[in-house]
Image 1: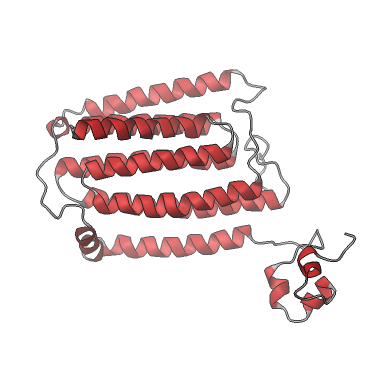
Image 2 (image 1 turned 45 degrees about the vertical axis):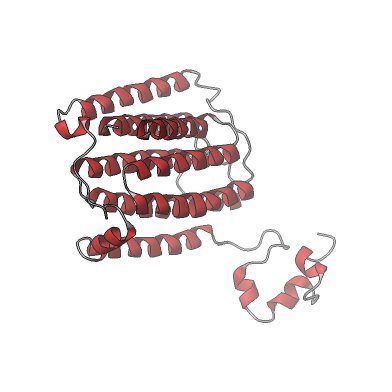
Length: 99
Length: 207
């Protein structure tokens, strides 16, 4: 398989994730769509690493996975905090950043 | 044979991605994302990134997605309407934006004229992508990135605990915070001295 196919799949997944972030209102699902976009980037990184025949892209993808895990931890903590304050779990309702 | 596996994994990844966006129940969205991540791990294997595929399955599917499932179960994943009622055009505008983004990305990636893209990829050595090679690179060439990533993980873990902790007074008297449990003597005050019984779990009766 040529590398182009992987890159097209990566672009498709990235677009689907971006569209999902715009469409959905539940912050949980928005975080999931963010994961989609990060993973599309990972796939492109690994494909480019394969195209060049060295492993630097794989290390980059590994670091991206670490950053994604951090983002998930903080994002889910925020959602739990929102839920505890009995605010609506809806990004259209959460317009004010004041505590 | 590789083509068959590629198309199976690619179809799985795309179906999982579409399911994540389109399913109304967040619980099912998480499960669709699990399907997507497993397919992506198969694609990583096809690209000879063995360690990354294993880390994807163990870290993402095994740990992060379970965290998602716990939070969805805790918050009570209610099905929400996908498009907002007040703005019916938003859904179509978003789909249009996603399509435009895909076209733009495809032009940017495929129109670059990189000749290496249209072939199988350059030569690889037998140890390519194995845990030993990745570990050697992480501890030699990319040591700084490795350490910074570990510090970032620590900061994120502490931040998540601080964000999700109970910060104001107890609104519901049945709720017991960690600080109350650590303070000696307050347990009897909270539960009426019935330590180790059902009343301790349920709280004082009549509330």
